[in-house]
Image 1: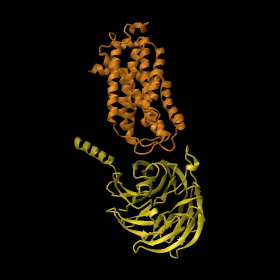
Image 2: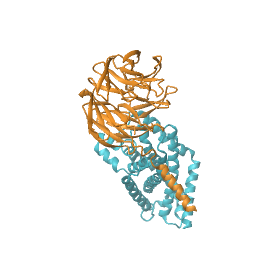
Image 3: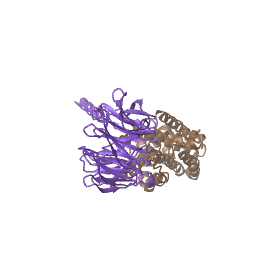
Image 4: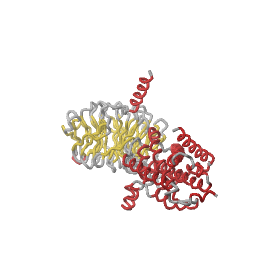
Length: 326
Length: 268
């Protein structure tokens, strides 16, 4: 009796040690701005499995809701490329307007809202019929793009005007503007739509905005001992679905800030690679992936334990990241 | 066989008693690495992170980097102190009592090493505990897996101390050992800077660091703390232990030792 018991305990111990959450089959797609490639990371093994060439200066990257296609801003080619996620082949290009940098997909999966950095426009594109549906004039140097969970409000931030522009997606008209700190880079709605988080790169703050009143609830500042204040440049931001935590990439501070999204207080800073830029969760929110432009790698953050578990080399100047939904 | 174990446990017990009664020694053993961790690491903070080198999987701050080196430092100093006590014993005459035991001398010396290593491991775990309180946490399995590494490095550094103590006959001479052995060993190792960082300033420095047995011990500890085995460092540490221990056994052999003819000097 003794032996099998010991055996069972040992076996249970071994199973306990095995990497949990395996076999999810998620893949992360990283746009390498300087290499004109996309690196694909298997999120079970945490290794780069494929790298394929794309258009020039790839930046913003996302996936269609069904996970079949990768959408990619090829900024210097002035197009958005549509890549088959299975074959890694570019199947078509979308008319994006000049210098597309970032975009956001409507929650229904169509259309795509694209920020045209050089033209002060947001271009609305039907991704099935490859047609431009509208061009919305916004502030100077549009970049950050967010959309409310119900799809009714699209938000664009303009880097030079320093505003978050609220656009009604039915009329494609700006309905409100909120002034934020200098060089707003990114906009993200919480999953319940009650808050909009906007990062200001030069201002060094994150504005948490009430989208119904178009008012700032709180501006969150950052402070890391030993790091120059001007190096604290918030860029990408992601909020967990349960609204518990927000993660903010702090650029050349090489940190991802962990913010308690209930109290809006910074709880800790996670050390990642150099000049951390964009962030993406895995669909199960087990991992958060950060692109680190200057060290040419991505860092994998375990969301539950709030620890960086690994940094993985990708191409040069990794910019954007998206994760397959299946 | 029982007599062997009796002798070993008696030696360990004596060392433990000595350690318990010398509370200052324990405090000193903890304060030393903590001063490094708090003061030195704060100065060289490297807040933007150190490049990734094995066994690390991602970027680390300097505080995290020097923890294994400070574990090694605790053991290095303990090894020296434990041998220092042997010199003291020789002066006071209690060593002669020990060496008159019918058991082979190498066994007595080995028991002495085990005793010293045990104490050093207690010190290291206390240090790791305080480091954890200051927020420097390691992977949990590392705390277990480091134990065999600490036993080996403790024995090796203890054997080094034993070997050195066999070459000196007076307590006062130990200051020289501190200056010419311990400090160079500590500074010319990977305890404080990674090898590539040393290589940036001078390839010669890097090579000296690479052959330093203390570097090898630190790397064994470093990898073990992250659940990995650095076989190269492990091999060199075992070899260094064998050489130092053989040297110590020879050094303490009255007919061949380095202090032949002086062995009785401490008796009075």
